[in-house]
Length: 243
Image 1: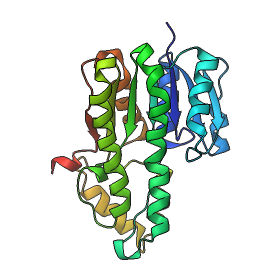
Image 2: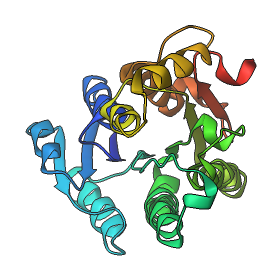
Image 3: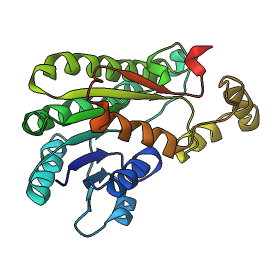
Image 4: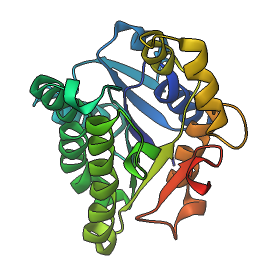
């Protein structure tokens, strides 16, 4: 039996690794991203790229519908699309607040809402990408942390609400991950090298996680071997929250 998935934020970093690992595991995938780079993932009969804005109201139904049309079923939703913001609270505007919630929270809810009836038919699952910022306090991340805290709680609520219909809902909470996402954020720091040193010092393993390591955790949570796991937030953070 061939399984199918929808992955958002699929063009780069963690999302791209998730698509590649799911494809290698035999999943057929609809890969969603605003960037045309997602087209590079196209693989006949296995990966269908969809260039779309996850914040647009019609995108969730379009993506889920594409999976059903192309593959006949939906077994997994990976809500990975997100934006990052590191900014002191007094410098954070209402527009910053609205933009982050519009990207990091509302699409996760909308995609889940569109996917859940199909996932109930296949006894499938959702894996959300949260963050350590949604679990602990980190300076200068007030709004970003709020959005990821919302993703954490959405995960728990959906897990409880849909367990009786056979749908599992979990999340990963990465620490610093070695992606362009982090590079772009650090480039805005007055001293990027010092910022990197602080980041590494805060992770007991002394390095950032690789995107593939986070992706493997996502694939694990989606796998049949994880059938007893739901409502869990799995930290992939090099020991950050254990300090």
